Length: 485
View (cartoon, rainbow, N blue to C red):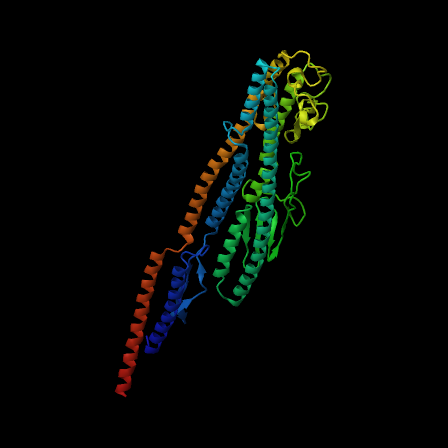
């Protein structure tokens, strides 16, 4: 090998190792940067006429793993689904309380039954009558508050969906910008690693809100779809999501008749599986929380039934102590569908409420009694206590047993709500562990290990030193040749 060839080889090696050292230093500097994937520099022998003449370097390589990245995104989406439902249920259950809490529905029903029992021993006692009326109003207020808590929780879920939709649309716009810059960099022959990092961060943000699949056909030809087949992004064109919030969601509002669905550019409902925070918000709003209010409505209906059945002064479908928003009649023969929203509308019969022009003594005689002749007669009070202890039918599709007494139904309703929260708390914990494991696997494969990078940097330094020594030796040889002349 000639001295000139040796110098050329050594100089090309110096340039390659200098560039490699910069890449390794950049890796170390970004070891803690979210979304950063380790880079490397492909090198090969430069051949001229079959003879080695230095080192060839290519565009910086990003050492990613699309399979592990997709697995990590899917795990994050699954965790986000559970976390969103858990948070929604915790906020709701904080209002309704545990079955044993003094403010819970079962406790308020128990207090009302206790007041009725006290009245049965002294039906003519005005104080006992007032206590029954107060306990009945507390029970009604508790049902109202529980219904209102469901409505608030559904509205909060609806707002959460709207916020997630806005965030996804913003991320899609960012993806457009990144993909265009990546295409320009690729056209110049420059590295696209920086833009791929940014793109992966954006995809992770989207995936936490709804599950996605990606198809990478090169810069400018990237496709993002939901797992249900909706196209969100196609070759630098974003397909935005659409959603309209509903400020107040009563029990009667059921999806999709009266509530907004998430659509892609307004062209049909988004098709997604049960992962991601958007799907969780829809599940809370349209399935879990409506099921809760269905339980409350059935307890309310059976409360009306009990006092209607026990009151011998009533005729036909006249309402007893409890009414449907003050209506004179109550008819539950239409089935469970007719109860919808009753826990919000249930009210005390004006006939026994002095504040509404009623007579307190009717609490021991019945709602349609004309006179207060039998002051010591407790037959009506005992009949109501017996009626509340009669097992009545409930819709088992809500999770309730098909036949229960009122106290059992109240306890079961609150218990099932708390049980649902506990289930999703456990699921959130489990899915968080799986998501952490998936992120760790991705980091181990594509992230930066500072110790390993420092070792590589030492090898670069040694190679650099060897190239310098070759140049120095060639320089001495040239000096000696000059002296010979």
